[in-house]
Image (cartoon, rainbow, N blue to C red; front, side, top):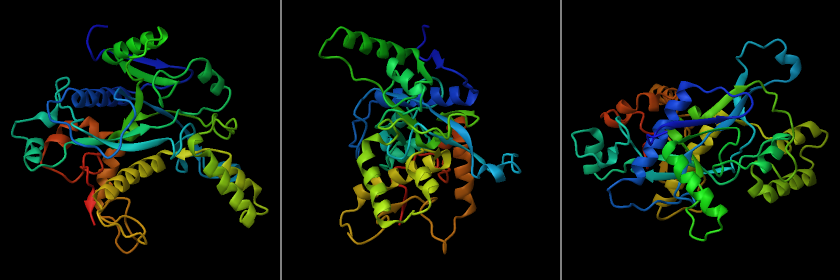
Length: 355
């Protein structure tokens, strides 16, 4: 390898590497490199990952049926199956806006430094924020046994990343190895360990595998579940349910709620968007009404809807484009044109929609 963006792909067991995953990883890596090499003055962020070394990472998903085995026998044609992760949950990640993390065509080409006659340059002149939303992992991914033991034997190269499918560019590999050698030699001023991130506008491209659900239905080893940082809260919830006898005679429902972790891809996308929107709402709301429920200043135009005000069709089209990876495939259009209708779905709009 010689070029900065020569690619190394590592996979264990049965893994499907798609052109979409490679394309999205390279775009996200170029975006990160653009943010690191920007000449713009640093802008304050609301919160962020603990490490400055961020590597786009993947999450494994498997197909799960919505229904029990009796009904599923008659419905094996795919309409009730959806991809779901089992190694993460909504407590495994948080959201941050990374300014200047947009790269155009032709290698690392920071769009936010643009002085050309593009929509990005116009936004900068209007003092709008330029960058995108990222999910960063605050916990390690937690596989079920026997893989949990393999994870301990050889930890994942990126904190919060998958240990069963990962990619690094040559530039990231060099930094990764330098940090590993430094820590192995016991030095004190070693560079930070890499942390896993996923761009919100292209979330589904980083969900890989789509294996049959052989990994699902297995309980995690106690204390090694996704959301382990909130384990005490979950146990308290379970005790509260038992005390109130809310699930009396429904033991299988209690087990499904508390013992198994199934995290559908669509729910991951929704949770990530709402976490980002609520973080921005908290930052922008100066006089918060303690009794109010929900957002008070800005909201997600797609997810924060009511029954009386249904979504317009454009929001759905943008959401479908984002979920199919088109925000990255047609990055030139979505990032540099004057069409701003899909900015929010592509994770490019910092302040979401005003209430």
